[in-house]
Length: 602
Image (cartoon, rainbow, N blue to C red; front, side, top):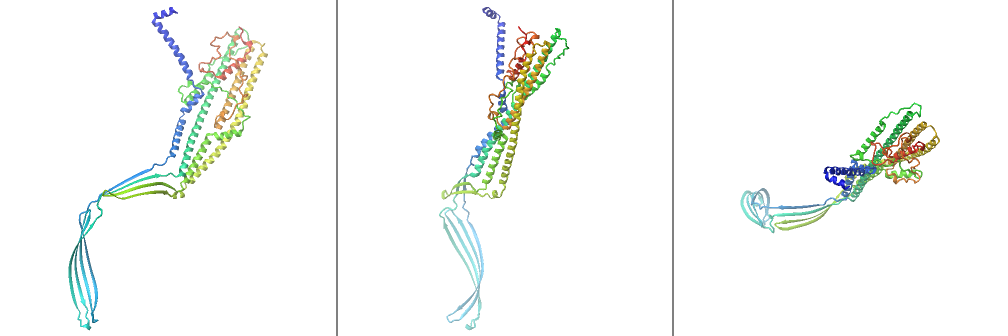
């Protein structure tokens, strides 16, 4: 060791090469561990599908929006504060003059009786013309009015004759002119031309209608439930779709393994027959086996890769090679004898997403109907309080305050037909709910009956596989003294028969799984919440034998190498990180059918 160390110290290039090799080995181990850690199983695929599904992302956003709308439905309208201030400025007007003209004519009849009782009659006609002029001078403390009146009058008097007093009569005219001047002064207590200010402050509070608010809150709550129900229904659809595709991959995986076993058995039988024919052990004509190069396996592998790529694309996984197919294809049995159909129907009516959605929509329509009915009840729209103040010339002249209540009279709501529309919507959802319940009930009954048939088919396939295994074992024991070349043919036929039985068993399990998935869809919930599998109704080990499969006959060939004899040897195109349980059982079943006399003794 010391000499090796000295040589490496003497040759630094060799030391670097060894160090680089060690690092590469370490990196390879780390990458292998990382790959194993990054394998994606069914649970991880479901988690990725739920996380990356665009529809689910949208529905999660809809839930957030509905919850925010529910909070917003509790909010009151914002109150209003109104402030108003007016300013007024007055100017003292210049002196102005008002002129007025009056003109009138009056006629009078007079009768004068003297002391002696004698009458003297006269007729007077007077015409008056008057010009009035007023000059008004405004001031902050007083108002001065100067008035001038010019009056001209002319009176024509006619005296009637009176023979009793020897009055001959006659006519007389009187003319007069008069001018009058006057001044009027009005003093003001306050300045009428002072600046004015008006200030008002109002506070208005809108009061929601209690009936409308209650209906809107109920509708918002139901909309949240609706968004969650739609999201849950979509999530179930995503999970079921992923499970369907995953089980399809499991089935294809098992089919590929069976095709490999069939091809390997045919090739092994052909090689043994050729060797026995060349050694002169048999004289019959040999049917040559022409190797197909794995065409059937390649076709199945192409379909498997296509399905795996589609599943990876569905869940948003970039590398489909990371998908790990390890879950058991055989599902646990379900105790149908102790399950009542009425219970399953009740479970489906309580859990089916479409029925839950219709129920929630019906409640939303009912809330809208309650809101339309509440609109017909009068209610105070708002309450308003206000204060005001007026000022003139910097002095407060007036203060005021008041409270105002505003009520709406739902006249047009009484005359409208909104409630009729809401009633029609409620009736429509009620009818949909009844029809959907009928369809769901029929689906549950059909799925239940189909599952019973699939279970009988599965049980028969299990019993047939067990009976076939026992028969093959007994038959081999009876013919162990038969000629060797006949034994090889019988052994090949038994291997073909075992493969066919396994294919039937696999088809029965897949049919049973499809029936389970169909019933789960009809119930709208996981079967684990509905059924409990009995302990004595499981897939037993006797139905599928348990030893390692070796297709080649050791008696007709040399001992295989350690690499070829590995029980886990799989075609590199199909190799995965983990083993496939049912395929291992199939291999062990075919191996257990080989009698000890066919095995080479050491």
